Length: 264
Ligand code: MN
Image 1 (spheres, rainbow, N blue to C red):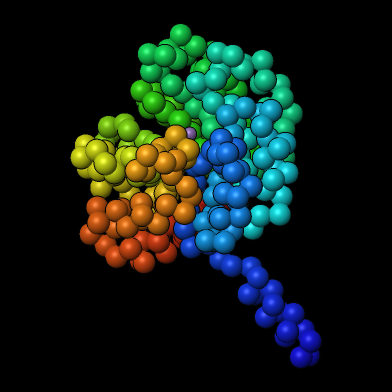
Image 2 (cartoon, helix red, strand yellow):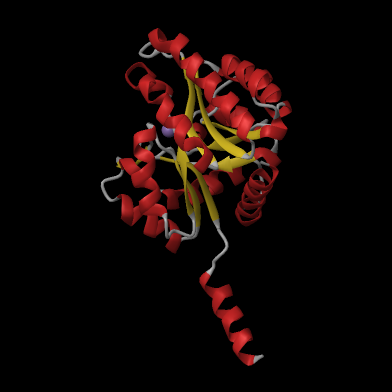
C-alpha cells in the first residue's frame, strides 16, 4: 500500500497542470525550437505549435513527442497556398493523426488576394475532411476575410463535428457575435491589445470563449520575438480590459481550454 501511494505521489508531482495557454505559436520558426519546448514545459504553458506546411509536421511531432505541454497542429497557411497547394494530398494523408489543425484559413490582404479562390478551395476541403473525421480543434486565420471564413465554417463544419479558434480575430462586433453563435473561440495576442479599436472589440467577446496566444515569432515585444511564456503578460493586460483579477482570468482561460478540448 505504501508503495502504491509513493508511486501516485511521484506521478502527481511530475505531471504539472498547465498555468497558461499559448494557443497559436510557430515554434518551428524560432532558432532554438527545442529550447522553447523545454521552456513551455518548465513554465507549464499549454502551447499549440502551429505549422505552415504539412511537410513540417513530422519534425515538429518528433521534437514535441516527450513534451507534456506542447501539442502540434497540422497546417497549410493561406499565405502559402499559392506555392504549396500541391501539398494538400500530404495534408489529407496526415490528418487522421492530427487532433489539432492549423494554421489554416483565408487571407484577402493585397499580397495574397490573387490566390484567394485557391485558398477557398483548400480551406473548404480541409473543413470538410475535419468534419468527416470529427473531434478536431482548428486554429484559423481570417485576415480581411472574416465573413468568408465564417461562411465556410457554417457550411462545412458543424460545431458538433469540430471546434474552431479564430486566431488574431479583427472582424466587426457583429461578426464576433456570429462567430460565437457558431461555437467559435477567440485567441488573443499582445498586439491585438495595443490597438484601442481591437481592445474595444475584445472587451465585447464572451469571456467563456477566450484563449490567449502569442503568434510568435511574428509578434515582437521590445524588439525580440515574443515567446510562449509571455502569455502571462497578455493575461495581465486582458484582466485590465475585463476589469478582473489576473489569477482568476488565468484560471478561466485554462478552464476554457479544457471545455474546448473536451467538446471537440
Ligand atoms: Mn500565425
